[in-house]
Length: 308
Image 1: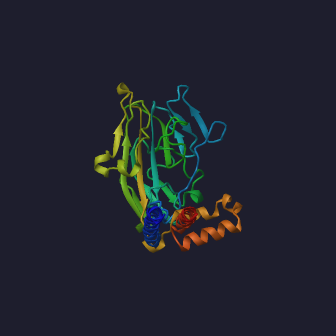
Image 2: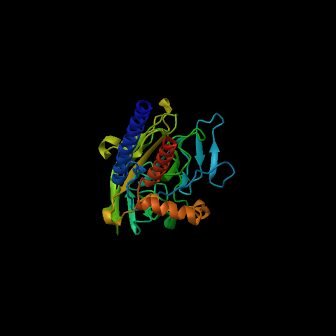
Image 3: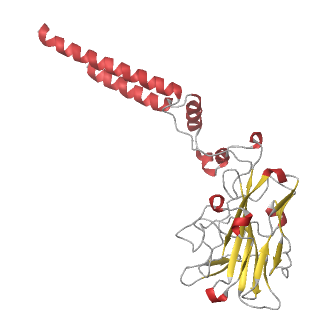
């Protein structure tokens, strides 16, 4: 009898030893945060992203879309037609302001600050060109803060990702051999030192539309490399062109915040119970111990099973 009981006792001992070692490892991992949720990787910013869905059909700012889905156009208060109308030469000069995390913003964190873009040649007739100016914050100085969806892709829209990201000046009616020029962006005002000129993105699409499947920061080039202007060429179907001046905020580190914290005001948060809040507080104080508690409970159950 004793000989048959001894192997069982040794087997149980081994199980307890393995369980103890496993628990020790888990406790060590939890203490160092290794089993806690990993950070989401968001950078701190000085201004939260400005989320403005692109106008849909029926919206006053929706202008037109191609029957074949190849392009979409939105109304722009700074869109003008030349008088007299000389031809099909048209285009845009745009400004994209990004926060430190690369998200579109409207400049609420840099009030009383202006970007000025000198223009020449075929835009001098435009009432708001020569030069073009964009004042921050855009929602206080311009009728439509963001009027262009210049970047990103989505299967639901012809061009862009369905969210506005740029403020543009548009012009139509130039002759089809006209030359347009623009100068380097100049930042002035109270917070000029917090805005960097990342670069310029110039495209002469030759009838294919603006290529939106690009990252504005990666695609931006120095002024001399971007071109500084273009000449229309009707023979090549190049009667439309655009340039986007890419700007990015760069505020002192102590004046930035974690954009994920703003989720605390999400309406769904009001549906949480006191118990949920207490659990969240406990998890914050002891990162990873929610997982540990479950494992300990399971281990106790296993141990009780072997005891039985």
